[in-house]
Image (cartoon, rainbow, N blue to C red; front, side):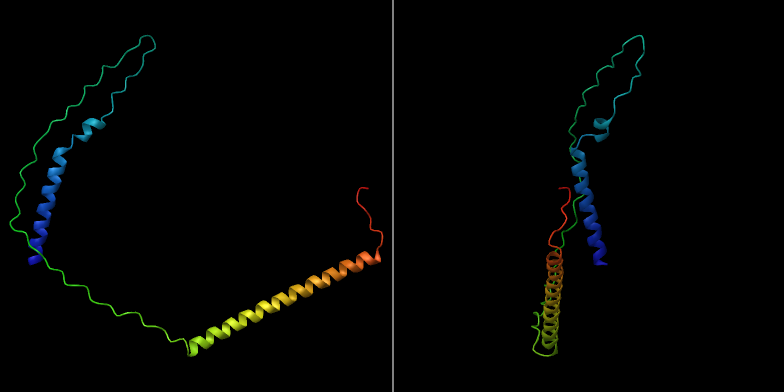
Length: 141
């Protein structure tokens, strides 16, 4: 039941703080009140009277009930976490990584060869077409 007393004490301190803070602020509703809307008449011009200047009255904060006693709660130190364990990648994990890297490199080399072959075959076709047709038609000339 000790926690209930601590809770009640904390609530009392919080309420005292809130009352001391809110007592020093001017009334927000009076400052935020909208001026009355006057409907204009077609024949005459009416001017609304100036609004009164709001006055701020300082009110001393209400006497807050003094806390019965302040209790100091000791927090136990955080448990020490073990350090990170270094992975041993010399076994199966390392061989799997090396195999994947080798497979990736082989695929990249294959893609490079296929691009080179496609480019050279396309250029051979273009050169053959140029050779066979010595006079190519020119557009618009």
